[in-house]
Image (cartoon, rainbow, N blue to C red; front, side):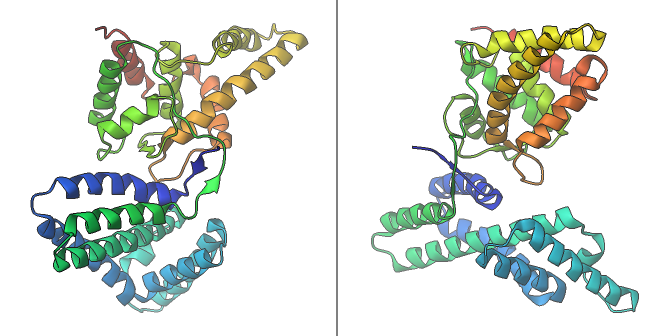
Length: 331
């Protein structure tokens, strides 16, 4: 049975939901928790409703989503809307700063934020209603949470299993914990990432909650390459020798001493290794705009990285030392 691929918005909802559900169920003052969470959501959505530009952009997205239009088409339409409001500004009409400062990426972030805020506000309202009734409150609350999770899965698209990596060492828990702490402390991953969310990237299971990578795609690629070089990540039988062979043949390519037969061998092996690697990278991480990585982006990044001196991107020295230190951790 194939697993499912979540949309960007579904992934973002799921990441936040995982954290909020845990905090809510552990809270000793749930009414206050809901009230505090509700205020910023209400304020933000009220601002959207009252601002003509933001309201128009939101309407474009709502209607487009209902009609299953492509995101890029909705962004193009939203950009035209922005141009119209910029014209108003040039003629002396007061407009929201959002019109002046935001580009295509920021418009997309705004669309995601509105959708996610609306979703969570509805969940909070439902929970508040359940709590006001009393009686079987706990059971009803858990039912509301379960239904909200199911709602977030209604538009899933069937695809291959999006499994993560598998850590090789017997003392995996210590090494993964050390990697998590270092990446979090030094700003490589979203500071809201929990250790549980990070651990699921390395248990060779379908990834439900990808981690947000905050640095460049070059450093992302270099991180995975170094984990493989240090043999911290397990590779399927037969792929590891092919990866090592690719490294040998790459030296010949750079020296221009490779034969046609060897070049064909290099391309074949690289395709196998890359396919395995890219699928897992895309399943485990999203970029700082909450956009999943795809094979084309990762392939381009890898090719550019190979052409850099020593194959080390700017800032890669810190990652190299970090991974070496983690590899040295023993029981």
